Length: 252
Picture 1 (tube, one colour):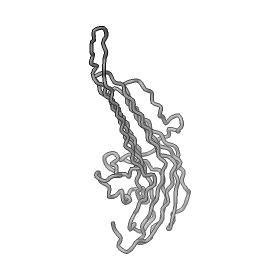
Picture 2 (tube, helix red, strand yellow):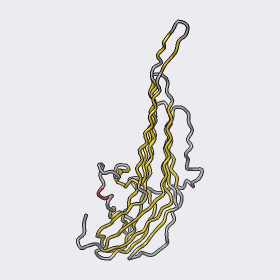
Picture 3 (cartoon, helix red, strand yellow):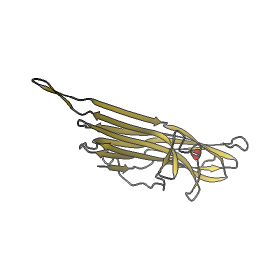
Picture 4 (cartoon, one colour):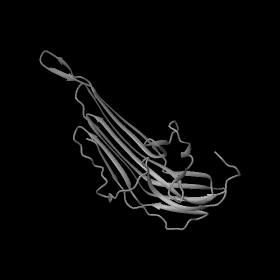
């Protein structure tokens, strides 16, 4: 059985007119997803609908959710420094059940990813912040979300449990017999996280823009003779945005 749940509640932000120097926004929304795969009947202890509103939220074509945004007015030769912090949560549970001569495995994965984008007055993305703009698949901390957009890894965990039970070898004596077998259990945890990240928009053209922090969550669960449950969420967060003037003709 596989199950996925998504939920979202309202975002809180500062009401403001576009600033030409510095601005900020906060997030009090919670967005989460969970997955389950089981063959031994374990129930799903992770859920969203009991504590969250379940109100739907628009997502980008590459599966990011707008979490925080603030308007900023940019003059000539200005750049934007964006610092975002986010509380994230991961839940992974694995269990296996093996018979003699059998290997069982359960794997649960959860991740939270983030990026900052610059929107024009029509809501179109005109720039993706650095260093995400330079992301590729071979850079630690970069994650391709869907098939289009990269985000920085805020939190990720892969938990894999493997159990192997040898065949039962029977030794028969003169009056009694015995069955000997070997049980091998292996648990793997792999976690990566960075809950505050600084984004940079160098040499932004003159105009009024919206800086938007976008986050994505992903989970997966697979098993053979076991149970795998995964959950990922992001919640309370803040972002500060500052307009600065870098050295002449600055570029990465």
